[in-house]
Amino acid sequence: MAASSKANHPAEDTHGSLRSYTIGFVFSIVLTVIPIAIVRSDWLEGTANAVVLMGAAVLQLIVQLLFFMHLREEKNPRYNLLSLIFGLVILLVVVAGSMWIMMFNQVAG
Amino acid sequence: MASIHSAEPAQHANIPQEQHHDHPDLEGMRTFGFWIYLMTDVLIFGTFFAAYIVLRGNTNGGPGPAELFELNGIIVSTFLLLASSYTCGLAVLAMNKGKKRALMGWLAFTAILGAAFIGLEITEFTHLVQEGATMGTSAFLSAFYTLVGTHGLHVCIGLIWMVAVILQLASKGITPVMKRKVQTISLFWHFLDVVWIFVFTVVYLMGVS
Image (cartoon, rainbow over all chains, first blue to last red; front, side, top):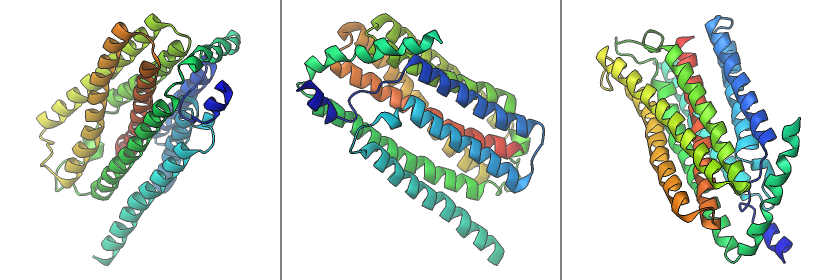
């Protein structure tokens, strides 16, 4: 009874342990220090700089989702993950679409 | 290595909660409903990010990102928010173990770190305005204040909310409803940390490099 009711409620219990939180925290610090070091040392320029900085930010997003927001522990059906993907797709369309249109506009102008 | 074993009590501590599963659907659905709200927040911040990225070059003869931003203070506030995300997680752990005082303590510590973050942000904004970089100076600054200010507003609301949850915990203790409330504010807080990482990267790091 208890087991079956638990299986039906994906968002009920978010677990996590001291270990997983600490790993996530260390990861997020490392992924913050690396971009700061890159910017401080003027190591990269232009596109390479932007790609590496965004890469670190996206990795940190994944770390936070997995270790802090417990997205991995969600039980089926994975509505949280689905709605997240939906949100991110729209986000990508809005941001990348805006950048692309304005770039095109500047070339034409 | 000892910390691996400390994971065990956290999982077992959830077992007594099964007895309260009279309305498990409702609490689960409420957490999911909050998740949906967070996804709409993703869209708000997404549009502000798009506006900022598009407008950041339009300085109207005024100061640009490289001249304005003081990276040192921003780095401090970034680590404050990162640490607060961690302490918020520790609060949830304490809750799963049924430790009310530890839960309230970690939540209070999280709120203090968040308040320090807001303090630094207000200092930064006042400094910028004193330098003549106001919201009306240029399209770049309009987009900047909108994006960073909206995040700051979210953190302020989170602070008020967190204090309210601490007060409720003091009177009601760790009930299933309070568990859901703590989990919701913790989701909100981690979400704000994620948004700040992108503000930090796109606005500040890319701004000065």
